Length: 349
Figure 1: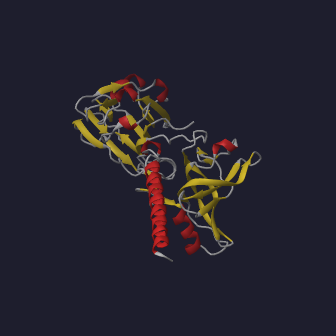
Figure 2: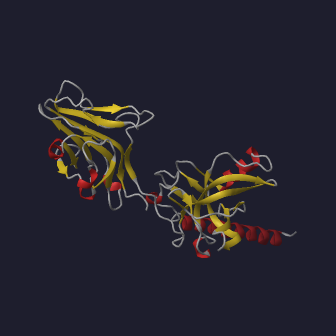
Figure 3: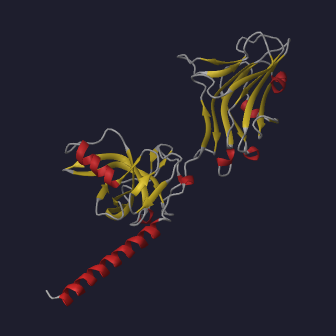
């Protein structure tokens, strides 16, 4: 080869490399906007973190329980014998490269092929279902709900089928397809069953009695654990507050609700004065009494829980607290039991 031909060949290689480099840069820039916002997380194991898509590490999650397509395939090859299925479920992030088996109206499933977008590695999700609703996987209702190019998170077990890993018994937990039916899981700011104690709640006695007013009653075979105000019903003057930790209710996108179950034993005429619910938006510096709905009180002679729902939307702040306030006098002492408390966005219907 003469010098001129060699020079032309080298220039051709340089030009080709330059074009490839520019293409790679353009891909990186184009993918930088392809992020799943953190406010769309929280469904079925995806915690409050940020899932990022980029050209170097492909799909990955900064923190959490998810894996990418490459990791899922490697697990299937290295950890599973042919014909073996994983004991645990994985949350697998990927892009839909194509559809192996199209939408089935009869069975409501679709079999997509996931990829890391920029590699040729492929993972079949066999007969994938749509999102869980109240713990039950739902059917797809049309082919437009899962399309090539969608960025998705799939939850399911990995099955080594004839030496090729695939996802089995899976369902969607995230999709950027607006037709997918994806809805962010309701945010739960505070959850306390009182089964094992008072949790992060604290007791503040404004008027101290000879016995503790608020205490935890351990669960037995015939009842669940609960927080109880004056189980012994000692008739003496007291005022004791069961106070929640400080909560950032601004994290709730719209409505913020308090739900819990309760019962009381005693006179209905004294109930509203002695058993009260308070809220503070400034970390407990100032308190406002909230009405407890009349529907949340049963007959004061029956130990039977009934649910209470109170709207906290008007009290959303970065330092919201609630408090159950128990009062008694030398003449009257009621019993008040609380359990299964939840504060956050309304649960899915």
